[in-house]
Every structure is written in C-alpha cells, then in structure tokens.
Image (cartoon, rainbow, N blue to C red; front, side):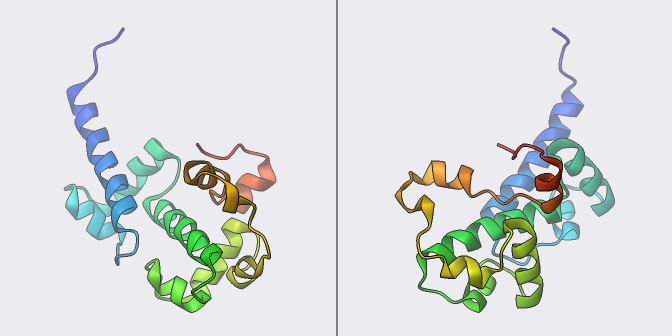
Length: 147
C-alpha cells in the first residue's frame, strides 16, 4: 500500500470541511467566495477541487441540499412554496422553482399537491436516499444516483 501524502490528506480535509459546512448551514446565505475564505483557498481553486473530489461544484451541492430539504418541507404540507423557498435559504422564488423542477422533475407546487407521498411510510434514512434529487442530465444519461 502506498503511503498517504500528508498534504493531500490536509487538502481533502479542508474540502470535507466545506461540504460539512454546506450540510449544516444550507439555509444561510452561502457563496463560493465565503466558503473558500473559510478554508484559505481562492474561489476558483475551491470550485475545481470540490468538483474533482465530490463530482459537482460547491454551488450545485448547496442547491441539491436546499432542494432535498424543500422536498421534505413540501411533503409536510403546512408551508407554501414561497415559505419553503425562503426557509431553505433561497432568495428568489423563480430561481428556486426552476432549480426544483430541474432536479425533481416537477414544480414545487405540483410536488406539494401530490396526494400520497410514497416516502411517508419509509424510515427517514431510506426516504432521504430515495428522494435525493437527480439532475436532468444524470437522468437522461441513465447515470446512477449518487449514494
């Protein structure tokens, strides 16, 4: 087995720190520049390295987290689309709706109106896996959903 390069490990740790911050603070105003400052990288370098490590840009990862949370809130049914949009950290209902439709395959209001959500009876850990948004490109290419 090859010895692990300590610099590479430190680099991956910083990228994981960014991903963990996105997971924790998805509803906060986050941008790539602020995330990069937090790990002492330039925004461009962070974006390239994050994509290389995790398969998508920091912004795309952030939006996926926000849409996942929005799906859960919409399934509850007690909040409207606009309230959900702002609750997950989006500042534009139009952008939120476009991105939601792109990832989920239907508009947020159509998703909210579904009579029975099949995940209602599932364990939360299974529901998260089943409802993970898939980008249209991934769905068209037949690419498997990320785990």
